[in-house]
Image (cartoon, rainbow, N blue to C red; front, side):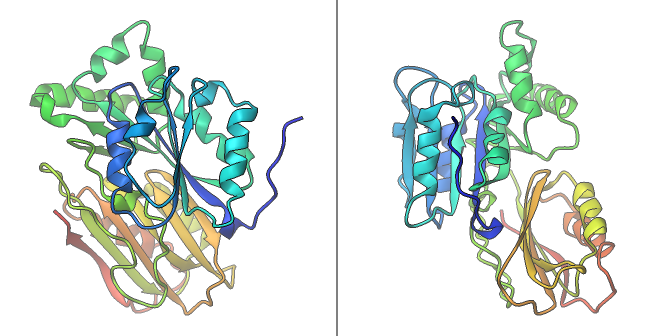
Length: 332
């Protein structure tokens, strides 16, 4: 009989991020970038398809643990060994702030993400899928590999088109069109050497008492990618249904949004976590002070901060004077 983890309070559930993408897309490079210099404790499970788990030895040093899975693809072998690993991670005396699973290059990140739907100690943070800008069109067209690539892309909450320096403008446009056609509406960011801000994974909670950094560090952008920080502060509370609609309508240039807010039908403060198109709301113990503080990362498109602020303002229960208008701070 399959063992079940104990039911935990929502605020204590460990966020799970799954990194997916075909062989050579840059998953381990991205993982190292996100972990290097990051705060918090991370449990990292690296699943390499093969007898020897090479990628686990390449993961950067960090405060958590790297757990090796050498018995094939995680999504194809959800057996006692993998569940035992999860049990050990979630039973650690000092809880982890975040769990990251780097999927095998031929694995299905969506199937791995389903773990968070059945294990009560986990909550799905995001599925981030990388694609190789130089090889993507050919891989999708390959009769043997195409189905695997398409399945990976369609599981994504955030798409990362990597190795953009290796293709000319027409090749980059072709790869971009493939991703948009397979996963329309999902945020897409183009990178070199998988250079995403560390804050994509940042576990720290935004302060509900002020301070515009909010514990939300922005990594220096590489190449010509121009990330921007969006800051949204208001007094009041959101209508739950209107907030859900606003979050669904946020522009694809927004990669990450997090912070503290109140809902009109609930007295407690809630923590919003959003990556790509996936978001969660978790009740917190903090006493409400009527302040909404959200910070985000966008790809720096002109007007992205104003667009986000406008959509969120429509979800407010009442029009209160803003503490600070939605703003954009350049990070690159």
